[in-house]
Image (cartoon, rainbow over all chains, first blue to last red; front, side):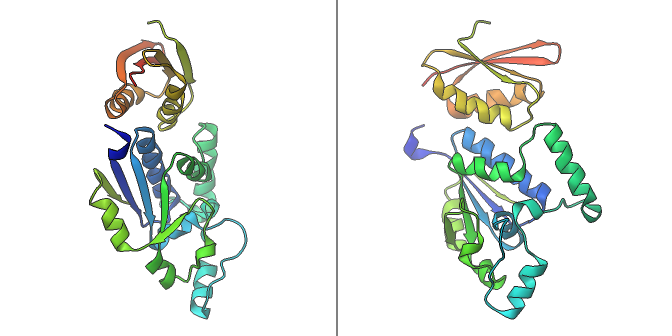
Length: 162
Length: 76
């Protein structure tokens, strides 16, 4: 296996749940460690994972502004998909992860970026959900559509939809 | 088993032992042996898979109480 013919993994991150995001980034960082070229394509609620934690999202229209107020996102604001219990469950889960030295979602995002994982935001859902380009954290380098995803996916050994 | 370098991953869960191994192996010379100490049971299945994917040689594992020691030979 040479550097030019690296195996690829492509992940669609549709969900914005903390637990699902963690699962995605665990697989992504492991794949990168195994020498695979990894792309994560964020769409719909998944965009919340890569939104900046700080500042506000400057949406264009009134509907989008309201939407982003209710759906602010950011890695530190995400909640788990079960037993969230108004945030109590999420806090417990985060506490447990810290005790067990499991990296936080934030750390996973930075780590994956340093390992060369490509983080891509879907332009269509950015449009629908009123998420402008400057809403994303610095690790997000590109924006693209479904054709880009399929271009990557058809060359991939594994494709996941999370 | 004799190793040239050791990586302590005790207390770390998947994927950290693998992520750290991938980083550490870069610092070894070809033919050298890396010992990884972990207590996440998954390591005995994960490390052979990592070796198969990266082409490094999996030399085996030793269990001592809760600790598992796995050995990898850097091949390239």
